[in-house]
Amino acid sequence: MAASTPTQTGITPDKPRRSKRKFVRRLIVAFIVLAVLGAVSYVAYRMLIGPSEGTVAGIIPDNTVQPAAAPELEQFEGTYLTFAYPGNYVVRPPSSDDTHNLETHTFVASGMMHKILTVTVTSLPSGKLEDDTSYYMRSLHPETYQLKPEVIQGEKVVVAVDAKDSQEAAFWVHKSANGVNLLTFTVSSVTVGSAATAQEYQKMLESVRWR
Image 1 (cartoon, rainbow, N blue to C red):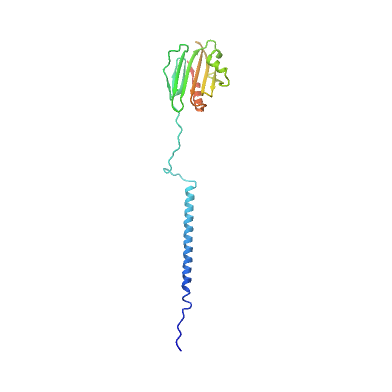
Image 2 (cartoon, rainbow, N blue to C red):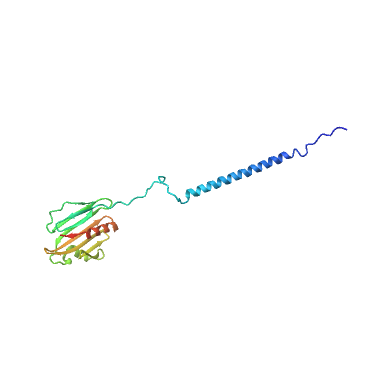
């Protein structure tokens, strides 16, 4: 009888199984690597967008716009009065044509908000504010002018506000040993209803001192 040839049973089928196991192991390793990379990426992203607990200097430039510094004050020395005004106003030479006024000065501030300040002192023998034509005209038109009485330096001052034309005019009757005078303190601006201009004007008015 011829000798039998040994079969390959149990040997050949193991190769596909081993290849399949290696493939599964590679998939598992690849999945773990991807999961780790994803976790690291997520943590890095959260650190970038999250609030910083430390101080980082020199990375992000500070582009915050700083408010403009207030101009320095100048002191005006007139014949009948003195007052402080911002240095961005320029004093115009006084005009000698008007003989009715005791004193007249004009101040101009140029820039984004063009402003004109007019300071006039006139004689008011009666001491009655109604006898001044400029004030009387404003008192007849309450639809245009809002009259606001104030007390400055112990004396009554009436401020007429014209919001439409952005103008404020203060009328100040002052009695002294030399008689009764009237100060008309007027500011006009191109900016209608400017709170900054109104505040600036109020400070100048309150700084007035009679000589």
